[in-house]
Structure formats: C-alpha cells, structure tokens
Image (cartoon, rainbow, N blue to C red; front, side, top):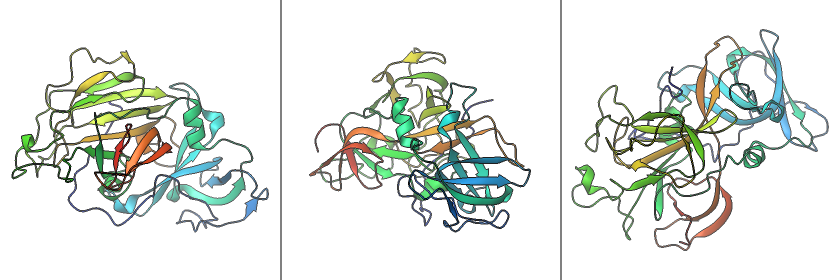
Length: 334
C-alpha cells in the first residue's frame, strides 16, 4: 500500500475558499454531527491554548488543538461533511506509534465543547521542537507561489489543502516564453530540485511521462519523492521530469538537507511545469465510522524566508512563514 493515495494540482479554476495558512477553529457545540459554529462553552477560563473536546457517536472521547479543517463539499468525491485535525502533543511518537493527530468527521460527532488546553504547545511549536520545519528552498533562486494553501488544493480530497505550487519567472513576472505550449517554454522546466530538510526516503516514482502544458490524461501518474521527517509526518515533492530522479535516491535512504532529488517536470495531475510540495500525516489509527487508514495534508512552516508581493521586491524577512499565493519567496534577500 503506498503512503500517498493521491496528490494533484492544476485545476484551471480555484475553489471559493481560503484557509489563510492552516489554523482552523473547528470548535463550538454541535447537536450531533453537523457543522460547528466556532463558539460553545469554554471549560477553564480561556487563558491557555484554545482547544476542543469531542464526544463521538461511538463513545470515543478526544480533545486537542484543531489545526485544520477539511470541507468535503469541495472535494472531487464530494460529501456533506467536514473533518477536523485535532492535535494532542502527548500523542507524539515515532512511526507507527504516533497518535498526535486524530481526524474527526462531523458525521461522527455527538457533541463538542471548547476547552482550555493550558500550556500545551501549539502544533507549529511542536513541529519546530521536532525539527519538522522547511529549512531551505527546494529550488535555486526566487520562486513564485502560483497556488498556496487555498484554491484548487482544497478540492484534492484532503491530500493537498496545505500544499504549495512553485514556479520561476523572469524579471517581468512571466512564467514562460514564446507560446507556452511546450514544456521547454517554462522557465522552471528542468530546474534542479533539492531536499529542503533532512529525511528518510519512503516513496519514489520516477518514470511516468510528462504532459504537454494545458492537459493531463485520466490516471496520470505523478513522479515524486516522499520523505519521512518525524513522528508520522512526511514531506512529498511532486511532478518531477520523467527519468530525472537519480537511481541513487532509494527507499530507505537517509538524505541530508540539500540532497539532489531530480528536475522539475510536468508529470501526473499537472497543467504546467511546477514543483508541488506538501506535508502529509499518515493516519494509521482512524476514529469514527469510516475507519479509513490514509494520509492528510497538514500545515507546516518554512524557516528563514524572504517573501515579496512583486518579482523585484522589496521582500520582507520572516523567521517563520506559511507562504501565500501570488508571492515570490527565497532564502536570499528579494
């Protein structure tokens, strides 16, 4: 069974919703499985980390910080439900024992109430403690985020909500030269990709064909590299050029940050050459009625990054950042 069931990007029209970088409330009282209103009674005075306690219809109880919500109404396989990622730092452990994230469907919720989690660490603080932070650019030079944690990524059945699609541009902000009908027209095509933080390789796909810009076939396969970075959190990089991932990148290899992974391509579910990357959590202990073992795209931060609204700057320095759609980013001054 592959760790990654599906990752895709390149839908021509974005969905009308913005997660704004990954935090979601997911709290409030419910009446037995419907949408929550973000309110609810608070237990503990609200002085510490805000959390939510859930009681499921099967009697399961859990609580923690709600770090993400997934609106299934936007999914390709659409349904009337919302899922929440609930973080309990006490559950952090090495694969396969990590239970720090539990994914709760609104269909399984009997009731929920807002709670005070006291001095429990935020999700991002816990990731930083475990060195699960993107430390460096995977591309050389400034990159434009053509889609961040929003738009068509929210349609991807929970596998892409917190992804980024990166390209390169010229000084005028153009992504391609000529007609843009050939992969070679795109400035990012064939650019080297390096691993932006240390990890252990868990999955490699290297030989799928590249698309021509503007279309992809049903069942198109993404060339990709997936690495384990801590707990049950993985970083996946997608759409590599066919045959560009070297034979030296093998499952089980422990790679340092900066390791060469291959070249930017246009393989899989992709409409133009670009690099897609996202963090995934492998949910081996699902709660509720579905009982589905699967991966979920989860929020992660970048460390030490410049971000600019224009190709020629000026950029703003960020110690920690969730890059935004339509921004140029680099670890050198913009």
